[in-house]
Image (cartoon, rainbow, N blue to C red; front, side):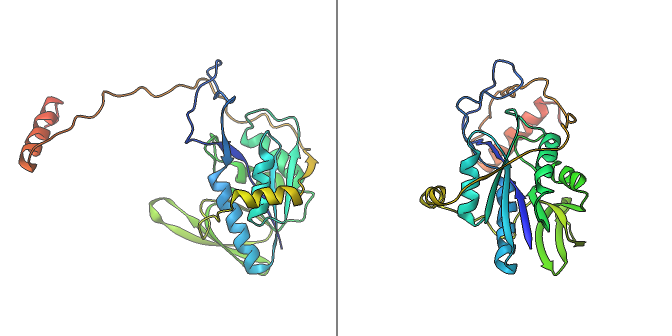
Amino acid sequence: MNIIVAIKQVPDLVEGLEIDSSGKDLDREWLKFKLNEFDDHALEEALVLKEETGATVTAIALNADGIDKILFTAAAKGADRIISVTGDFGDVVSSHEAASALASVISQLDHDIVMTGVQAVDDRDGQLAVLLAHHLKMPHVSVVTGVKVNGSSATITKEYGGGMVAEFEAELPVVLGIQAASQTPRYVPVAKVRQIMRSASIEEIAAGGDSAGAGSSVSRFFKPESGGGAQMIEGSAADQAGKIVELLKEKGIK
């Protein structure tokens, strides 16, 4: 069985984020990037299936500055093959453009399951898995929290709002948008990543397919306005309760 996991790098939100001069994007000069959290879960679920079934796992990503480290990290975690999809990609790639480029390469590879994260912090639609399924003409399930393979089919656990879950039976091949892996994504030390960098190689395959211009565009980035701050209420429980009632009355709440 062959599992392909589409991954991407996203801005590390722990870092300070600044808006660029255009007002429509982040200032990327000093941005630090990391593996998208949901893609990390997709990779972990693929590796769990590899351990259970002996599957081959391929990690694939659109070429970008710094993506080599992300791909080598995937290899250090256990991916058997790492591929960089080359093309004329800008700093911001829409889900439509990414799906078209990735599908043009995935369609050339043996694949039984295609996984990707259900969303990313820099997505505006979270539709990559859906769009990949469209381009690859394969069935699709998203918001997935568990996968079990049974021969030529898979039992897939999907999460709904309010804590509801459902199980689906899908014939392979299938595209899955992973919400959470069945276990916490494994940690890989930097030393192992550096070791993999010396021994593994990244394959480069040029993107094909049609140029996808659909999707949304950003009109303006802005920071949220800060509020007036919190008011700390001190005293006994009775005093605090009384002050809260007074404040609510001042606000016109009766």
